[in-house]
Image (cartoon, rainbow, N blue to C red; front, side, top):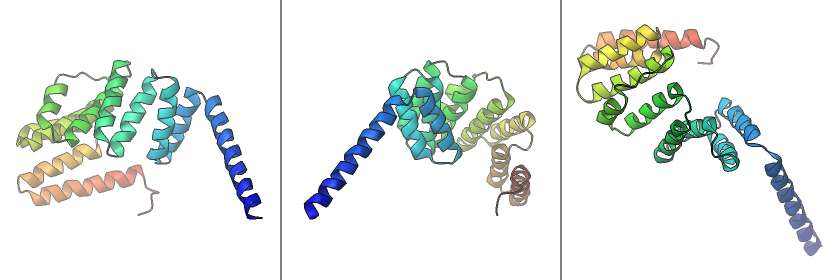
Amino acid sequence: MKPSASKGTVATALIFAVLLTGCSKTQTPESSLASAKEYIAKNDRNAAVVQLRNALQKNPNLGEARFLLGKSLLETGDLDAAEKELRKADDLLYPKDEVYPVLARLILSRGEFGKVLADFGFVSLKTPQARADLLTTMGGASLALGDPTVANIRFENALVLVPDYPPALIGRARVKAASADLPGALIIADDVGNTVWRVTPNTPG
């Protein structure tokens, strides 16, 4: 009985492996990319990374897959691999409005504050959201380098582009806190909380 059961288990495993291989072969780069987007929507970054790598194995020139892989790797903390993919996305001419704000945040997270300002200080982006995102990251770099005045200007400019933009509001609160204006920082922090609640009022608290 035991040898028979063992053979049955092995056979089942082999059949399952063959089925998986067949599915993988029939899956197109586009379907892998679509599947990755579904995982990203569910906040399952690890599964998304697997699907994005599957897509790129079959078509290395998918700029969107490169970008989403870089962004997902950044969110999982793999900074070196994330930068590599984001730069490949840029080489493939994926929109700078998508790539540059994420790449700037990656460099900021490494603590390379001067590099953020040097690399992105003269970058021209098109959409208000992308420009606000990049300005906020540059404001964070300026603040880290001990220049709260310039940092605050960048946060304010970001808020002109996207009113009530939470990351820029948080940046302004950090400037207030750095200048020992704790009441002012708390007022802004409260504004951030109200803004987030207005955007997602049905989120469980």
